[in-house]
Structures are given as structure tokens and as C-alpha cells.
Length: 280
Image (cartoon, rainbow, N blue to C red):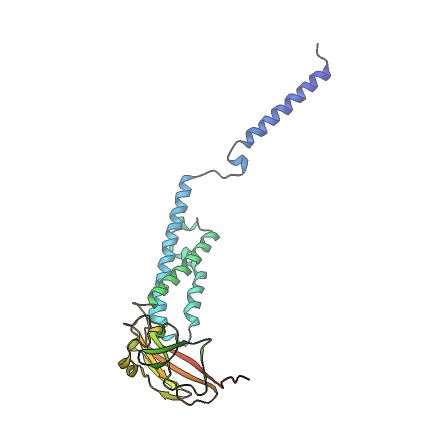
């Protein structure tokens, strides 16, 4: 015989045991019970095709934008360089509309905010890469020749030149310095530096490049500032003798017929003349 209380307790225990087993089975089960969407292979393939089509469309748009900006906009935009980056960057806001206008509906239905985010980055980096390629040699030249290995001063004589490198954009001398000192440097370019036009001045007065007269005596005199001797343009500017204490400037104006515009550069080199320190 089993009394009523014992039977009810046994039934309650069985229900609890059965409920715990159901929970364990649900925990080990994948799918909707765990909030995971069922995998649909055909939908996945369709989305991958839509994303691939989006990628190629964005790269094509970026290529067209790069070509238009390089060969149509750049030749007339030297005075308004901000336009060259503003218009391509603003193009990211047109990408959703272009997708909806160009892509078939069965591709568009797979596009989300994530698609526009990825497309925006792809557009910007593709445009930058192509623009960099088209504005540098051999397709373009937008930078004037620049000083190759820094600049400094040589003094002395043939075969025994003393070289002093500039510090903080200046060369320092003491009054009564020896004559025959030259500011020396060399220009290099991604095309041909010799085709540019150079003008030199000292405190507003035009001066000449004295390299040819030094080269006759010592072709290696400027080796400290030259790393591309077969391509560069060496320059030696004589420092006038007898300068009083003060600051003076050599200025170099560079002009080059680049592609797509004229490239210019101004370089200023300072000469500081000081009174000698008298030891007490």
C-alpha cells in the first residue's frame, strides 16, 4: 500500500527530473532554440554575388573619378587644391543611390548599412591609390626638384675642403672668416632635375652658381651633399667676404614645367655671422 502523500511526492520528483532533462536537451540543441538563424546556402550565395558585384562597381567608379580628377580637373585646379580631394570624398554619399540605380533588384535586396560602410572605404582607398599612381612618375610630376642630401658649407682649397653641415637651417660664421667659402647642396627630382629653372639670390641680390668653377678643380668637392651624381644638379653659392655680424639669407627659386601644372619651390638658407667670443 502507498499512501497519498508518498504518491504525490514521487510524482513531483518525476516532473522535476523530466523538466531538467528537457532543459539539458535544449541547451545542447542548435538552431532557433538558441536564437541562431537557420543557414540558407542559396541565400548566402546570392549575398556573396551581390557583394562581389558591389566591389567591382565601386572600384570602377573610383577609377573613373580618379581619371576625371587627374586629366580634367587637376590642370585647372592648381589654385584650388581642396577641390581635388573634396569632390571624390563627397562621392561616398552617392554610392547607395548608384547601387540602386545600376544594380538589379535581386542584388539590391541584399545590401545593408554594412554594404555602404565597406563601399565607402573601398572607394576612398581605391581613389587614393590610383591618384597616387597617376600623379607620380612616369605618369605625372606635381613636385618641383628638392634638395637631395641636405646642405652645408665648404671652405678650404682643392683636395682639402672642410665641410660643415647646416644646423637648424643655418650656417654660423665668425667675423673675419676666411674667404672662399661656399654654400653647397644638390637638387634631385623624380624626372630630370636639370630641366628646371633655378634662380639664386643673396639678400635680394642675384648671384651665380659657382659649381662649374669648383668642378674644374675638384669634381668630388660636393660629395657630402650628393647621393645621385648622375642625376642631380649640384649648386655652390659663394659666401661674400667681409660680412659684418648679423643674419643673411641665400634664397633659391625653383620653377619646373610639370604635369599637369607648373611646379615651384622656394628654399631659404640662413647665414649667421657672429662676433668672436673674447676669452677673459
